[in-house]
Length: 455
Ligand SMILES: [Zn+2]
Image (tube, protein in one colour):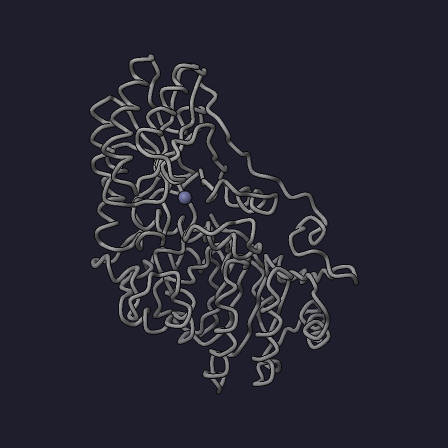
């Protein structure tokens, strides 16, 4: 399914915020449009069900926990972090992740590294969600539909981000106390008291990372809950919803799993920002885009208005943006949705200007970006420097239009740590058959438009 981005370019509408800077947390004020809030699930709804949930993994006790659940005819729900006790891409954790999923347990997100989401900015919250989604899609091929905010903490900004990413927030209505100092005996007693009250259903918080939980509390809880007649199900089942936004094949095309997530410096993939180039060169081996696909895209693009992208065409929208370029950068926090960079603006001083502008986190998002440079643009280093400034903001991109020398495209398209996650469309202008491959992790990229220039 291809999405026409020509209209986005042709319109080139720039929206400015009111003179007083809006609070960064108030997206509604910034956008002028209502922002939906994600549903927060605080309890199960299906009668007679219990959802046993396990946070903070993947960890070694998952095997024991799973074995007990399966033996009891039960399924559990695991809320995993990307980088908490360990890196989710480590071989040992990849095994745990794949094992639990294969056993039929529900897997869900607990954010990348277990921060209190209420202390983060809009972009940072997106990042916490996105990196776990990416890991799930790489390792399992599923897109999670539920996220448990660390400490159960959330606010409207967190709910807005969750809604944008198609996820529901999950808390709990019973805490075994295993992460807050309860002894196994106390946890057992808490389960006993709960079961004695016999609520219609239970959404129970446990942690995957404690030996006592796996070896002492869980056997007791399973036995008593079963005796009381409860059905032990996943969170999705206990609220009658689907566990995942989508299920496909794992996106991990790489043969060597550890190199997928561990950078040359040994850090987990989320810290890749400063090592992007090295990572691309050393580890990415994605399959090429089939010629048929390229041809299809080409035909689609030719059917559109190819004049839009011709730099010499100089449509009105481009002039409007370019004449206010400095004004926009120099102004205080502003909201605008379109940035267009023309050859005359590819200047050393603008690299710093772009950096400063994009650095105002929270003031810009959902960008339509167009960068135009002729195929023979003489200063590739300068162009690369400009693209580099944009890379860390990729989670805020909506449309990206590039008319740049082909050599620069792998930088954007095959970068596993900036995989165009929020991008709805990508439009490329190529001067010849592209040599790049699109990284398989570009999971949220819903369409690509390729405009091939005349030979
Ligand atoms: Zn936690």
